Length: 124
Image (cartoon, rainbow, N blue to C red; front, top):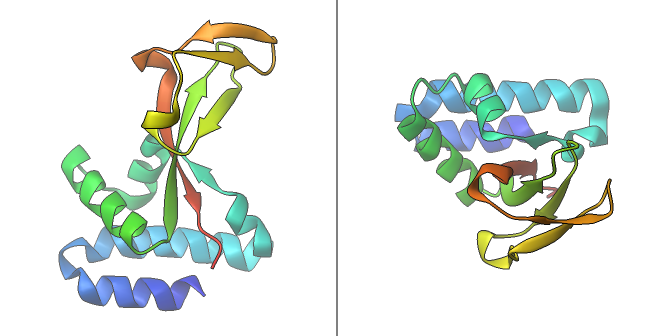
C-alpha cells in the first residue's frame, strides 16, 4: 500500500525524492513486519527528521507538508506533562490554557515548552 503511494509522491516531488523514499521505506518495513500496527505509529518532528535525513528544518517542513497533503500523515498536537504522558489535540486552536494531566490527575498550565506536534499514519 505505502509503496504505491510513495512511488507517486516521489514522481511528483523529485527534489525531495531521497527523503520521501526513506520515509516510505520506513513505513513499508513496519507494515511488512507488523501489519496493521503501522497505523499506530506516532512520530515526533525529531524522529521524522531522522528517518527522512532531511538535513535542515526547512527541508523537513517541505517533506512534512508533502506527506500531510498526500494524507500519509495527520498532524496532532500533544501537551506533554512532566511525567511523560500527554493530551492530544487535533489543532493548536483547540488547546486550552489549562489541561488535566492524565497521570497525576492535576491541572497544568499549557506553555510553549510543553506543546509538540506529532504525526500519525493515516488509515486509508
